Image 1 (cartoon, one colour):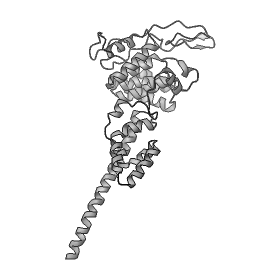
Image 2 (tube, one colour):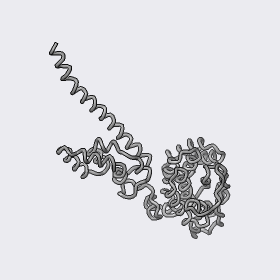
Image 3 (cartoon, helix red, strand yellow):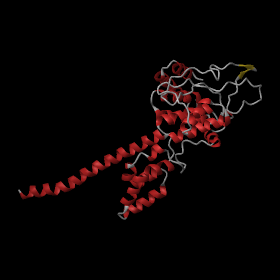
Image 4 (cartoon, one colour):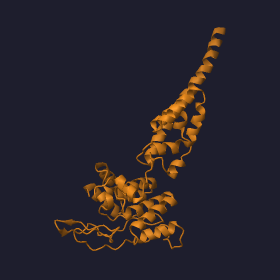
Length: 323
């Protein structure tokens, strides 16, 4: 881990989530592939109430380490805190598939699926439970599925900084449970040099579906009317990976029927934009569409001014000449 990641982890252990965020954001800026920095930063975001930031960051952690059960469990907690129960259940189930003896994942699946259980009282989550660490395996023998292999240096076993199964006590994150912050070693396809996106696709968990003409996150669908798509129609389509639709709307505008296409885009714009253009995250999508909306509002105000002037100028001219 980098010095910033180490400092962020120490801050998180001591309960200083804001201090951890400052250090871990620096670590990710220096190395966007630092899985542990994403893992800890997601936990810190969650502990400070930044649920959607936690979802975005932990989704990246899952992308970098798709076979890591703890990353998927933490993502489930983030989704649950943000109010997305179905997505939380899927992530928790994936964690349990990767590590069947993960007690906290078992509790999360039971809670999210409606199975009767005894959840901890609000604001007083139970102490997190982690799977027991396995003994270091001889060189050349892979660790058990879902369990990290202990690293070795020049043939000598090296003790991990925070033994797996004996994590520090993280700060509570609301009623559902706690984020786990015990470090993991690389696992799965990513550990063997595979592309993180290929590894995630292989594991069956593709969370960022933008630009894939696939499923749309509920927060994107719930955004409502897309003003940028409505006002700029064919230009917006060109910028969102739909050139043929853009050309069609341009021709439709020439016939005076472009308003029909604009209304359809206003209703379906968020879905079409997400499916046809690649975004870094849901937050990135919101930022881009808000920028389009601001330009649309500016154009609307400018058009109103032009119309008012076009109506008033002849009246003013007539009054002036009559005098």
